[in-house]
Length: 394
Image 1 (cartoon, rainbow, N blue to C red):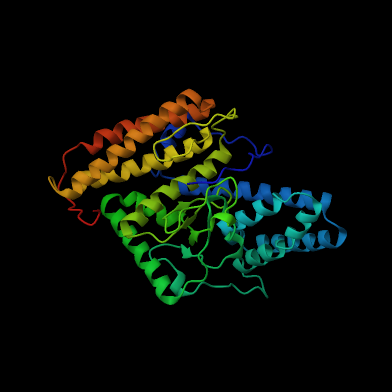
Image 2: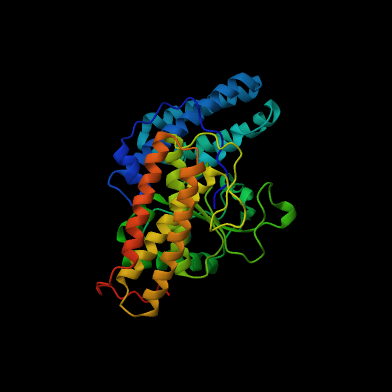
């Protein structure tokens, strides 16, 4: 699930990409060079947001606040001169995007000036990443590091705190040692399951996901409109458009459910970045349509996002079915899951083709999804090769 994106930036230069690459992206599969391309694209977007922040501050902020902004900007420049790669990595963190989007969304000069006070914190975080003198790296407790990756449990990051509100979620708060250990165990189990049936996907998730943010459903009165709050005890995950590579999720029931969450939300993050670099859709005209995985009608942009994520889930279960031993409940269950997702994706692709307001690039992307769906549906019915007896995907 994903909150609606902000209005696309009009000043970002066009991002050139071939028809073949767009179709390949539509297939959801990890491609060589994807991670680097996504990081480069996200860095360009972050720089654009930073420039927009400075421009607005020079136009709206009072003299004292503007002086602080200029000082923080100079700190960013010093950090860049010392270690450009570390600065790029720090600016690519989901928390940096979340704060920048929040500051720029402020209405009116007074509210914008109030939010500008957080720029110093962001600049200090970047300076510490570049190891500037007097800015010690904050470090992450070992108990919050997620094994086999560079990801962490972000249980107390103020910059990420408000991201789940549009989906009716709130941060779960600081984790105790036992709770953190439980999350780490689920993460390790999820990657183990993915490595068994789809090593490429497991590597992609380990490389791209920066943090997992434990969340809980908000009380109905506290949920931000227009999103409906999650039911008490519901298990929900979400990607925030401004903070790709952060997975916001309630506690999964088991490693299998966590594996699905990670596949699903990583696709949302990928498309959150790609959709800002390549214009896939025009104005939706206020049309809303039904999809198989939601009870409420969705606009075309949300349908594109959901279709992309559910297509990857269909692929996960197709691979699980192909690797499970013939005649086992695990194989039959995986085939049934794949069939369900394929049917939902097929219907949604028809809606996108008819009503999705697709650009030329968007049509290529959707055709890539259609080709992937055809191959996935065929793969789900293929006989098992018997090389991997997957029993722990129930």
